[in-house]
Length: 172
Length: 74
Image 1: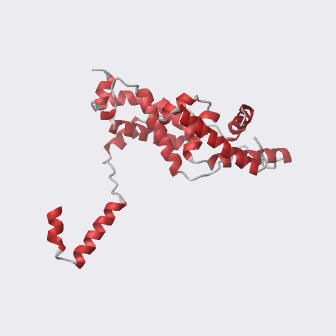
Image 2: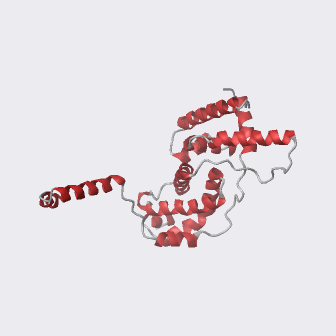
């Protein structure tokens, strides 16, 4: 019986081996979506907890990493839905900014505000597609939707962002 | 919208959205995982079930004659 078969049968030792193999990759994926290391640790544990509770639904001949990534993406999406919308300011803001620096910072804050105001299901697509430069296929697999649906979400998100930035007179 | 516009937006977003502070995992999460596994599962009762229970309680209080019928159907 191989590791995945033992995991599918509910073996805790097999689960521990898989956890130790994949925890860093799951954390990296989640932190790229939510940008918060403390919450990413919690969500990594939450992802594996969901995976362990669903072990009976996992097909031992399936792709464990892809399955885990989908669970992690859903956990991150749930987190984005619960989290309050806030705009994080950079730590290196100059104390007495020059007019140019102030304008740049204002522009960054406006872009971040527009981004943060997107619905989570659109924000995650923009985050992974535009910021992290993941392919549509990777995003589609992670979200469990078709590539066409990812493209549609991206189109809608970009249109909303353009409208908001245009409203602030910051045409992209 | 053109590819140029999307690329421009991509550049702006990459500057504006901060990179994660700790992109790599710094500690082993297995001990945390074990403590989460040992917690009893958190069972959430849907609000509708509470509403049904409350309604049944109120009805039983107002019409005590319904109690045997309610028990029969449980």
